[in-house]
Amino acid sequence: VSVKNFLKDVSQDATLLRNFRKMSSMSEQAYYTEQLTDEDVARRYGLVMRSSSKEYLKQIAKPKFDEMDMFESGDGMTVPFTTGEAILKELEEELNEQLDLEEVFGAVAHANAHANAKGLAPVAELGEEEAEAKAEAEECENTTTEEGQREDEDEGENENEEDGGKEKKKGAVQMALETAKGLTALVGGYTKSLNLPVDLVMSAGAAVAGLEAEEKKEPKFQANVFGGSSKVPDNDPCEWLVMDDPAQPVRYFALQGSDSVDHWITNLSFEPVDFEGGALNVKIHAGIYKAAEKLLAQLLPMVEEHMARHGAAARLVFTGHSLGGAIASALVMILVHREYVPREVVDKVYTYGCPAFICESCGCECKTGECACAGGNAKLLERLDLAPSVFNHLCMHRDIVPRAFACDYTLIQSILCKSDVYREHGCLKGNKEKRYPPSLYRHVGDVYFIQPDTSFLQFARPEGDSPMLPSGHGIWKMVEPPSTLKLAMNTMNSISSTLQNEWAFGDNLTLYNYANDVDHAIGEIMNNPHPLDILKDANAYGHEGGVSRFHKPKNYTRALGVLLKDTNTTHSDAKRN
Image (cartoon, rainbow, N blue to C red; front, side, top):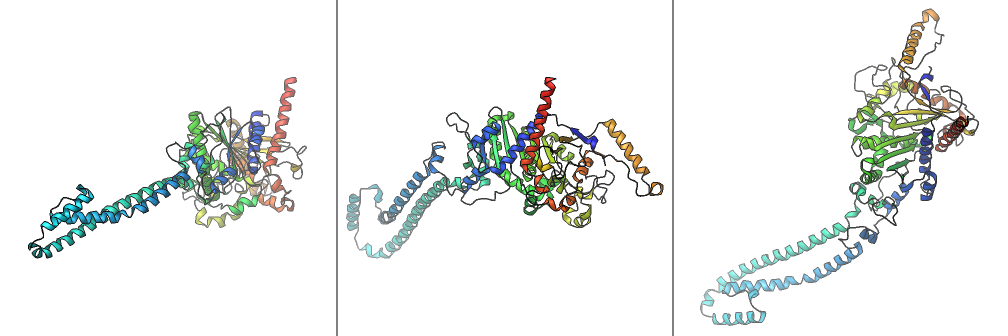
């Protein structure tokens, strides 16, 4: 099957190549967050380092905040934590000492009860000595023979009133104690409220993220917005870098992936699950979706802070290699679908060696090979109101990772379809009429293929050029051909199909066919060579094997660099002539 009419040569587009190379280098540097410095970022890209997964991990691993730093960055209405704790301790000690007032209160209550029984003024209205003298005098005057007659009655009344006094005493003291304890709990809870889990403080993160000015220099994103829990949350989807353009309101997010195939096959489940609760009618690679959800909790504060600072002018650019590219793509779709960001804010997503990870969900009763849902993900982008040009996937001509889930799964289709998990999986059903073979997933947006220069790049020499691409080094964008050309191609395909009859020519005749559409053309490239054919070669394995060589992020950057150099040389020669 010929795909040449679906290949648009963009090797001379210097702007495109510069952007691809810059983003490839960023995704490569995401593997080195431990060594990368602010000066490295400024020198390489002219950008300002804001944060990284390294700083994030340091912050969430801290058992406590730096109390004075938190106080100084606060609103000045509270005291530092240490001072607050000291005050609380002092108040608690005073409170314990004041608990002896219960006896005083009890004595006063008893005296008032006795005074009430005798018709005397309450003790609280007299001085202490005056009250005692008056009580004794009046008690002596009232000592008569009636005392004996009323003795039992008085004792009963006194007991009742003393009990009532005790109840009043208990209620008042208890109320005072409860109030004091409640106040202590309130203040203590407030001083420890900043030790909430990440998901509870995440929404407040943007409010304090890098807004303080220090020596008239834009500060880094303050990682302490991630919380101070001593328990480190599940935070291992990938390493990442966040950088800002000092001249424009553009924030870059670079996500690390993997330079080995077994990393994402072993550690991430590739079973399809509903994406965003099925609202977008697509199935997504379960492991990539889970990783994107985790990363959302880490990066959303930085997204919101950037938008709060620059408003409608804010722009976000994401880049990632391998799994990092797939996670970045899924993360952008989540951000847009959940309306965390307007679609206009997302400028571009660049991926390198990214696995296919999403496809249409099929709930129809179609038979295998007749599914209208098979093919690309154009409908998904329409639902999200995102242009295909937002997503830019670059695949090395022999990289196995982009092929792994997008290749022909005919050999195991029947086995997988027995599982309920794959029963409504449109890609796996395939479409014989459109010549879409069964696969697991498809890429989203624009797809590019790059073929490295074998003259300058030793890693590309052993296997040579791709059988599906023009000879020589270059970069091609997959596009639909002009309508008139496509009509001619479809006509030739119809003639070939008609002539391909066993009774007329026998079954050994091979006729020339054209791909039906761009999705079919992409599928043909992904299947030539098929991943199983690549893995049959004993030289494909190991650090210097083809699987590793054609997937390394560094080799993507090198291939783009050589191509960009040739393009610049060509442009310079053209100007001189």
